[in-house]
Structures are given as structure tokens and as C-alpha cells.
Length: 254
Ligand code: PEP
Image 1 (cartoon, rainbow, N blue to C red):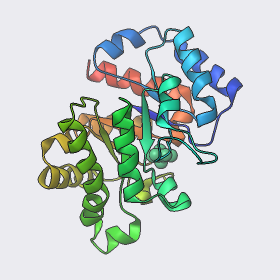
Image 2: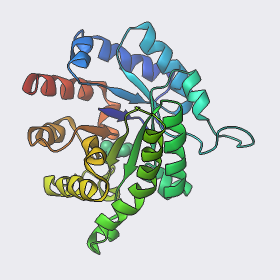
Image 3: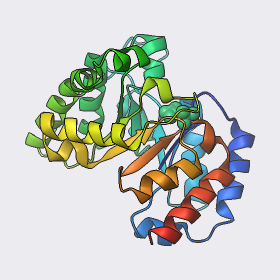
């Protein structure tokens, strides 16, 4: 489960968040049973969070919200994959719709970033999904294929070169992010089916869903066995909601 904090939190809020999560002593057991919490802070707090998680011996992954599509050099304001590696960051969210829409990120950028992340054994969490207009005009499955095709090409190249770093694809319909509307089970099944058909089983195996997930809606989706994991924004700014979600999952799916 990925908590995308977006441009929220500061050092004292992060400490308070970890204080709440530290009340739970079963994290190591849950993680060894296959559950994992990934925390994604703004880049300036990656180092602080990574150090705090290590110090408290919490088995969480620390994940960046973005990375530069270039290795190094004159890219003012950017952060490189080597810098993420240097901080001990485990993964990176790529192609979030806010980055595509507000910062002009293209499918080609997302593919280049995926290749760079894999080359440094940083787990890419690649977001994709259609806008409301694309869904209404029934273009959504073509949009998914267009967004994923260049990424999957890079994944295949990395696999051929020996990379075993996992790749997660996060279906995040733009109309569901931060709106309180979640995709229907059939929509998510359609994504898995489309990806499997277009790119093979491996592509659909690590499918995450994101878009107004709460600890309650998450339980329903898990019950139906639809997805492998979740990317959660607003709801997981509250650490109590994270605890509720893990309590529910580990009780009903031990
Ligand atoms: C997100 O930021 O990826 C997201 C899914 O946000 P929210 O859960 O707030 O819709």
C-alpha cells in the first residue's frame, strides 16, 4: 500500500505520523506475510523519513514522488536516480496524472524514468489512467495501451539485461483522483484484462489501484480479489486510516 503524501507534511508532521504507526508492534509480522507500507513524502523529506524509519526499525519502504528523466548535469531543480539511491530510497512513483497534467510529463518521459529507475534497482510505480472525457468517448483502453506501451518496452529491455527489480503499474483514472469517486470493480477488471492481452500476464500481475481509496473502499476491493495493492492520496494523510486499513486486511486476509 502506497501513501502518496503529495505536497503535504513537514518534519514535525512526519514525526507525529510515525509516532502513531509505531504504536503498532505487528509491522514486521505483517511485512513478512506479504503486506507492505510504502510512504511517499515530498523529495526534500526523503532523507529525513528514511533516517526516521531506519532509526525506529519500521519495515516501511520510502518512495519518491518523481525523478529526473536524465542521469545528471544541468537540470536545475531536479533530483536524479543516483541521489535517490544514495538516500536509500526503495521506489519512485512515475507518471502521476498531476505530473502529466500540470508539469507536461509525457509517456516518453515516464518510459525514460522507468528505465533509469530499473537500472539503479529502484522500484518504479508507474501511474496511468484516462480522463473523464476519454472514458465518455470510450477511448480509455486505447489510452492505457498508449501510456503503458513505451514503459513496457523499457521493462522488457531491462529484463533482457538481467534486471529483476519489480515494476508496479497503478491504474489511476484521472476522474477518480481526489474526487471521492472510485472506479467500479468491472473497470479495474477491464484494465487487468486489457493489459494482459496487450502486454502479457507479467504486466497485469502487479496492478495497483488509486483514486479516492479509503480504508473502507479498499476492503471491498480486496474482498473481490481485484488488485494487488493501492495507491492512496488524501485518506492516508491520516495515519489512523493506515492502521485501520492494515488491521482490516491482516484480520480478513491473514
Ligand atoms: C493519488 O494521489 O494518487 C490519489 C489516488 O489520490 P486520492 O487517493 O486522494 O484520490
